[in-house]
View 1 (cartoon, one colour):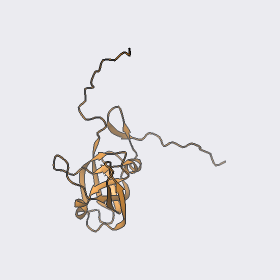
View 2 (cartoon, rainbow, N blue to C red):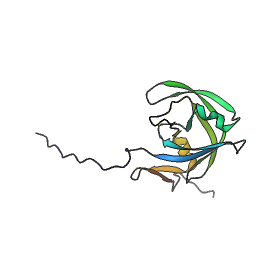
View 3 (cartoon, rainbow, N blue to C red):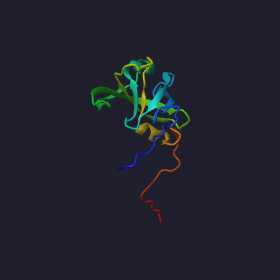
View 4 (cartoon, rainbow, N blue to C red):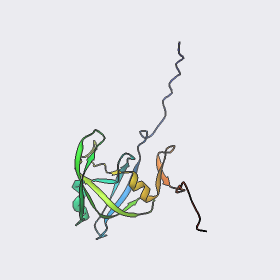
Length: 150
């Protein structure tokens, strides 16, 4: 007969894996048009994904491309890639890039939940500390082969 170990639940203040960070996004052509909000870090998401309802806050942000994106529940949605935008994840270096706008409904608390995906984290120099469930600065950039110019 197999031995069954006792179950000891963790004491947690946040759900496992949930990281929210303050983010500021500004129109890259008109820095006066900006928005600051809290976003969910989602390594399964591509870039910075915002609700289409916020698009007006950025003024005339050019439409670069219409794309399809698949959600976690396997729905396929049409999204707009717009830019240039200046993005700053609180505490990390700002970067210029594109933002994805998609139709999304508000969450249980009545607020939208924008997503910070893996490419936004890379560009900001941020990595996830799995022990503390927060973002930390990347210490090293890894290279498989480094050759000096001799």
